[in-house]
Amino acid sequence: MNSAADLSILVLVTKATLVVQVVMLLLIVVSLASWTVIFGKGFAIRATRQETERFEREFWGGADLGKLYEKATNRRHRTGALERIFEAGMSEFLKLRGREGESGPAILDGARRAMRAAYQREMDALERRLQFLASVGSVSPYVGLFGTVWGIMHAFTGLASLEQATLASVAPGIAEALIATAIGLFAAIPAVVAYNRFAHDIDRLASRFETFIEEFSNILQRQR
Image (cartoon, rainbow, N blue to C red):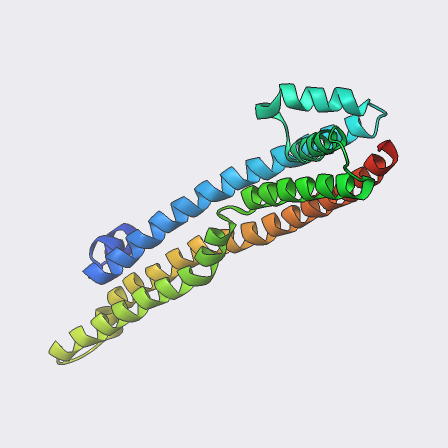
């Protein structure tokens, strides 16, 4: 490569060694998958937060528990996470209260267990694919570094056949190798930022869910 045009990114990528090209392709695929997860998870968490706020306003606005339960049951496939937790607890409470011989503590314990099970299902759904972002953020820089090291090794190996090594002769090989590290960082940085943000948002939602479970349990204790 004898001109500045030969050092364009496209030329460097196309003339890179096969191993470096495979590393670049892998990182690009991982980056695209990571962005897909980021957008999908971002929309899901936003929708969950909005649905939670809506149900909390409705619940604490003095609505009748029976009407809320009936509404949640009728629109089961369009309810939010907190509403499904409420439905699980209310359903178990009504079921146990209708049985003969069930004591008050047993009824409350059953309702609380049902809400805890629903809570765990909702948390599993929110946290799904979150570990993928963590893996991308931690592994991608090393994969890119591997491509860089391999490319630099190849560049210096090629100098063995030259009688006089110059910067111009080694620069293209090093430049094409460094692109792998750049792509690795491009894949890792958004994944790390998104993971930390989503983990924080999910923790806040989890706290709201747990608080609701305890407060609703106290309401059911008075209802029994």
